[in-house]
Image (cartoon, rainbow, N blue to C red; front, side):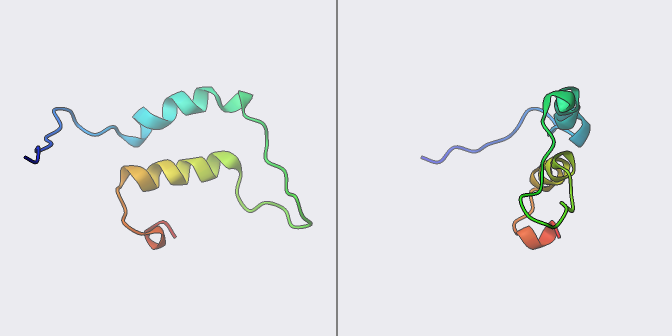
Length: 65
């Protein structure tokens, strides 16, 4: 028999999820380009985009672009 899911709490906001990560930012090493081209985005920018993407529950990666 299928169970229904009804969350009792509000989903977390972006700040709720990302604030603990920002506290660890100083311990994360910088990304380095492995080629001749410089990186377009830093690691924290990529991480912020991925967190926002998952919190908004997109169904396609095109929504992220």
